[in-house]
Image (cartoon, rainbow, N blue to C red; front, side):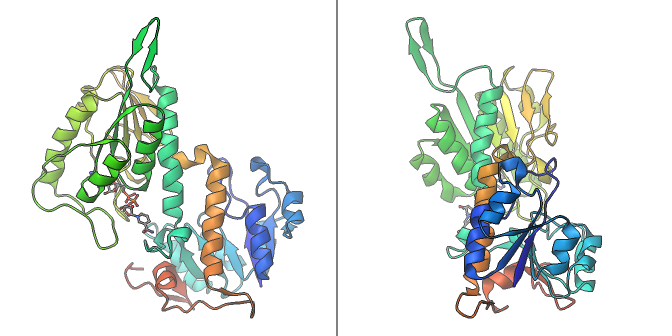
Length: 376
Ligand code: NAD
């Protein structure tokens, strides 16, 4: 069985999903691993390194697609490229399952079995395959480092003969995977940390990391869905929340927002008036910028300086600040997904489609749309 990893546009996204280390492990399972020439050159992974780990190298995407039984891709290939794959090819990638569906139409027509890694269920068993979590961890860390670099102050308290510098104050909005890592990173750097989330269960987690949990009574029902994601707030609840948050922002040097809603646009948490209440030189990092943004005025991959001197940063994929580690984690997630269903003795993929992990990730198979929850 052959598995191919195509090269992607490094300027758009520098991560890879097959590293030499994961190529070796896939190879040891009994797979023939093929990578496109130059796939990891920017990360110090030369073609030779891949070859030494048992992979073969092809010079074009078309060549790889023509041979592969499995394709491990970072994102969607071009819809037109699907026809270059063999009928029945299993395509695994961050395929944007809620995005433009013409891609999946083309996948059905080409007989491709498409697996979207964003849909890995949030179960203990599947945690090792969860690309959203592994990347959110890095993004939370990166957000603090990016903000600390942009800020004209240091984060820790410093007592010197020349006087005492007060610690910077960091406010984290949304305490999921990224938010927890941001709290831990800011604490390690010596900042004073405050955090907020609509899911009350996280209060204890914030406290255990040494942060202060901000309570805002937004009224009505809040909390989380069965899958562990936040419930969407009503317009009225969001307005009450915005007022409470504006006060916390006014006392912060750094604000990091991580609030997302799975498969839907991110909630708008900070309005221009909240930003106007912040001090000159303070920094806001909007990690939800890619799905619409939590912060009014944030722009993808730009730093916007407002009239009152607040720096609003909108890293589309903050995890890409560290592409090597981001790639290592992604490659491990993909490997774990595959190997979970691999029978090493028979050298066969034994995944049964009623398995919750496959049922949750597989969108198209045998020319049909097969996902039960997401509409084609
Ligand atoms: P996410 O990326 O969907 O959202 C980030 C955070 O923003 C969440 O904590 C969410 O509650 C919060 N949020 C949403 N709307 C908000 C609003 N209006 N105001 C303030 N905060 C708001 O979340 P995530 O990082 O994917 O994590 C969600 C939960 O799932 C967490 O409890 C996490 O620990 C859990 N999780 C479990 C697994 C697993 O068991 N395999 C894997 C990943 C995450």
